[in-house]
Amino acid sequence: MVRRELNKMVLGSVVSSMNRFFGVFAPAVLPAMILAVMTLASCADSPGVSDAQAARQRSRSWLEKGEFDLAISEADRAIALDPRSHEGYGLRAQARRGKRDLNGALEDATKTIEMAPASFEAYGIRGDLYLRQEKYDWAYADFDKAIELSPGWAYAWVQRGFARLWSRRDVEGAVADTTRGLELDPRNVAAYYTRGLAWQTKGDTEASLADYDRALAIDPKHVPTFINRGNLRLNQKDARGAAADYDQAIRLDPQNEEAFYARGQFRSVSGDFEGAIQDYSEFLRLRPRHPVVLYNRGVLRVQRGEWDSAIEDWTKALEIQPQYREALYNRGLTRGKKGDLEGAAADFSEAIKVDGTFALAYEGRGRVRREQGQPGKAAADFTKLIELQPQNGLAYSDRGLNRSDLGDEDGAIADYTRAI
Image 1: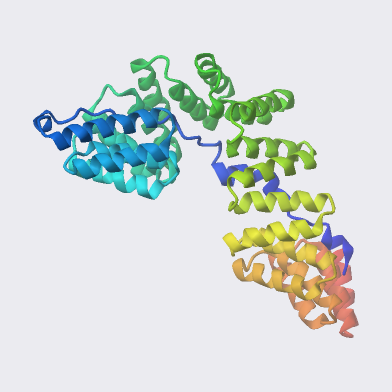
Image 2: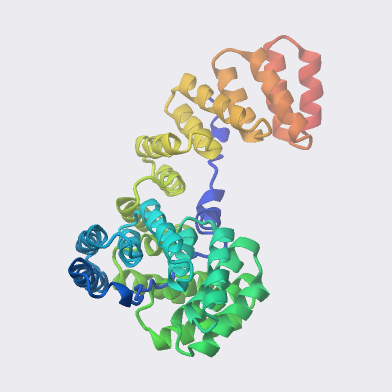
């Protein structure tokens, strides 16, 4: 196989995959609230309801302690004892959210709204769940309703600002909503954090840093702010500041996959491939089925000569996302380097099925086919490559080689001439 082609590993995803994974900047989940709605006084005389009240209080206490399984158990008991009350469903929704059972939490939150349509807190919970599912328009609608029901609730203003930023790239609207949240609650960390994101999206670095600094002055342990301030510092070429922010985020929360991803991104662009692989591996320990991180780790493993491990990562990524063309392409390149020409050709062909304009895949398959002794098919691939990239001199040179193999010396000379 022509070795120059095998060096064309698609590296762009290592640099750009943070955008694909987190959006422009990582949309961290804002602080969760504990639903605290009043028990219906009309039911107070019922012994069963009294027991349900006690179960709800225990559920709320377990929620505050982060003991989600116990909170769910008590919420289940409250629902069984008093099925007419929406409170048990609201508490169970929050506990399920804590366990990342978003579908179960969403079901309970919707049930709460059906039973208590005036509960602004229930709309807040469901809006937060929609944010976590990246259903930003739906989240916006729920926070909008919460504001209608309770205009003085700072949380809803901040979250609606967050939804505006991610659903519509409405930076000005996000700034307005979070600023209103700060008027209602001047020490609202999430408001400074979200407004910092909005400024960062707009490109106002000074305002963004100022808001991140304010957030950390109020809460020095707010991990999402450290991550995003690190991202901002990295964009400003402040490598030392970015590293310090990522390190602090991980010290504060060693189970935060976003922090490991961000530091892995930083280490990869800094040339610390071993450190980046370690961080991506920590991310995958916490969230094993993420195709972009598997892909990125594979790219870095190739840089270290770990071809089999790279192929393994890309294969796992493709099991999750079968149409991941970059993973197909890079696996094809690496299989070719290992001498597996049939496997390489299959991967390039699959990448072309995914995207018929993927020029690199035609180039890779053309070179594999020539090495397999198929100059006619190889020439056809380079013809397609030339259609896609008419100024690609190497494509003419490669097609010329194959035309020569076919005995078409005039065509070969014409191609060599175009390649010069």
